[in-house]
Length: 161
Image (cartoon, rainbow, N blue to C red; front, top):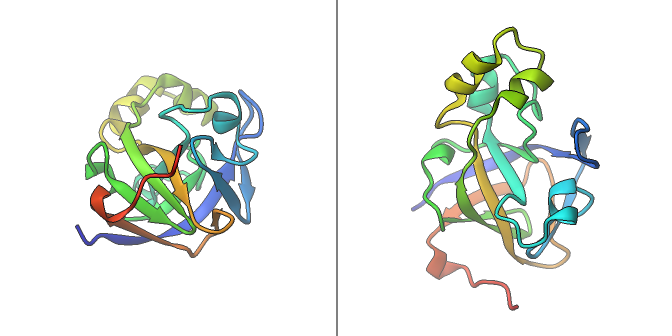
């Protein structure tokens, strides 16, 4: 697999039920997600540490980056076709895909759409991919403009436990 893309923006949800806040960078922590983000802080080991959404999904809906509560908005054609277990190099981190993010009606409510059910249906198969942090290089920094590259799991070692 030789897919490539780029990080466009980073959003961190500091507290449960609060909107994500745009960040200039994030620090990936093995098995904990992104430092300062609610999902890693309260759910170590979770399969939902970092959500990636491709910009095309947001553009099709007329939504701003972060509107689907993703931590990383990327320009990565084929993101939603990645299989569980696929690994992505993102900045100084390695993320492993744990599955697709199932759309829920809460997204419609937080975006004040007239028909949350219709939004949920329109997002089926393109709400993004859930990942977990399996390795970092250096301090694990991820910044807008960083490359996103897919590679077979055999090419990227798992983090030591």
